[in-house]
Amino acid sequence: MTDHGADLLIRAGAVHTLVPGQAPQRALAVRGDRIAAVSADPDGLDHLVTARTEVRDLPGATVLPAFDDTHTHLVFAALGAQDVPVHQARTIPEFLDLIRQRAAVTPEGEWIRTTTNWQELNLAERRMPTAAELDTATGRHPVLVKRGGHNDVVNSYALRLAGITEDTPVPPGGTIGRDADGRLDGRLIDNALHLVERLVPAPDRAQRIEGLRIASRDYAATGIGTVRDCAVTPEDYRVLRAAREAGALHTRVRALISALGMTSAAQVEDLLDTMERWRDTSDPYLSVWGVKFGLDGGLEAGATEEPYACDHSFSGMLIWEPDALAEAVEAVVRRGWRVGTHAYGDRAVRTLLDVYERVLDRNPGLPAGTLVMEHGGLAGPEQRARAVALGIPVTIQQPLLHDTAEVEEGFWGPERVARLFPARGWIDLGAQVSAGSDFPVGQFGAMRSVWGMTTRQTVVGVKGPEHAITYPEALTLHTTQAARLTGEDRVRGTLTPGRWADLTVWDRDPATTTGAELRDLKPVHSFVGGVVVPLQGRGEPRDQPSPARR
Image (cartoon, rainbow, N blue to C red; front, side):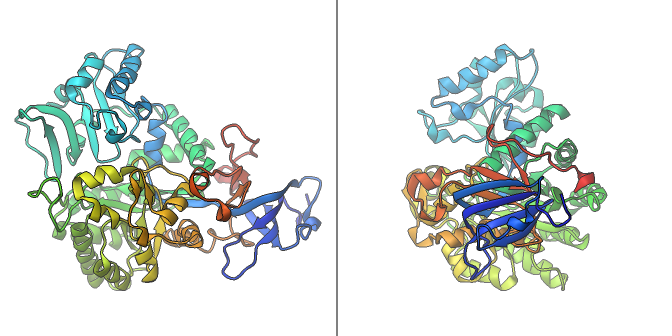
């Protein structure tokens, strides 16, 4: 190959660069991990073809930048790749039988874990299993059933191992569930999760790397080239580094190191000490974005201004005291890291903006985008305007709303659920907003998210159609705006020379695809850094570059 040749040339029906005002191109050339050139003439880059150039003639195809999922949990997906697949169950007996089958081949006393991407309302019984029911699946193993990132159900064996009794104090910001008779039912929420999860041995390194290989390939298979993983423990990050060294990451990863479960600045300072060693270890595939805090709960415990529809004495919970959170966030930004904070209910959004305003006042000159609001679920007009005035970016997750709307209506009522994730309002105010899935609570997928934002469709119909946005706007929330959020808009987000060759190839134009066809549409090829990702056995990839070869 000559110095001026291309490694890859794609001739397509349309190459959408996402450069404002630029007409669709017809050819795109890649050299190494960068885009070398684009042309409006399908034969306009033929002079870059050498004996070693891979040429793909795809006259009916549409080429787009690879998408970002700006708020997701790749680590959870990787752990679930080898866990009991309870998301396949449609009844509690089926759910229990899957656990029973795993127990039959698991040595006595070893932990059994389940996948996390399921909803109880998808079960015929429309509820979670109980500890007593899990006991019928196995009494010889501790069982951890996770649903999303805020809820666990465990069996009696696990409760005994953790020393949880009816007299165990409830941790601040957490819940230890009880049945109607006051007995433990195995349910643990938010800050109570660690009571059991601290006892669960991590899978061995090889298993975890293989899980990341599978999960990152699955993200890429939907068109996602970069994930912003919003709950990465220090050990998780070490595994991610090992997976990167092994060539097992098929997406780029921007990690938020988790401060979830912490309630003081002193604890956060210890975490920051651990993070110091990672300042200079990043590469284009893997880096630390910053620190993740959680201010309120999820579906069942988001902090609201008005009481819950199902319980007029309950308005969710704040996990941090505002003064303590402000001190902890300041500790992070003074060390030069960024902060993303989970704020779901409107009371949490208001409180977080109070905290962020204090931090900005005390630390003038912070770089733009240092403080980010994750979710901003129920942010109303006044809160949105305040976030924009303060320069606070927000990440929204339409797939979360799609999958959980029925659950949330039970807690908050239809009117509040219809107001969740008001993309139209954010964009009209000029907010810096980007989009993701919040897997495992919502399903990840590039076009699944675009379809949801343009239709506001959920499992129980259209909710809040006035908050829908256009297809071109939805694309930017996963590409140009997403790259801006990670501070990489000069190297990612558009298909222009010099930027990383992160792109997706679709066999039809998503812009003219509607309904379920758009929702389920997947690319025929995904490239990250010029490397084609094997999509469920389709295509042979070139070797992923190692860190030494980048």
